[in-house]
Length: 129
Image (cartoon, rainbow, N blue to C red):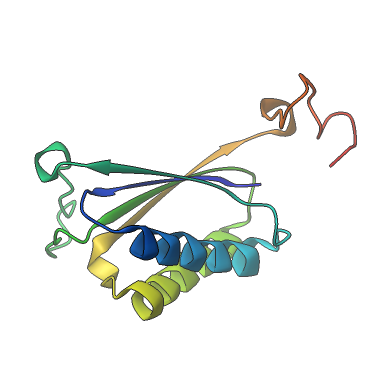
């Protein structure tokens, strides 16, 4: 159940977006050990002037192929997060041609009571998940 949001500069076609989402999902499944159908992804495309993503003083440049990935999830270990970052860069590079300097990730952690998957229930708290 990570909830994943992708922000990127507009212009990608449907096939490119699907490749991006599939590649990211493969990294999530492998790094976090979630079930294959545990997939919650949203894409927002922005005009180029609406995204300013600089390098935080690390000395690298971004292109118009930049992707900002925001992950909301229950707690993951530091190792799982490091594995996710590594696998994500590998998958997005191989499947989508996105360079490592164009991938920015933020993970926000929450708890079991912060999720309802429908029906007005907290499925984690009820033991359904």
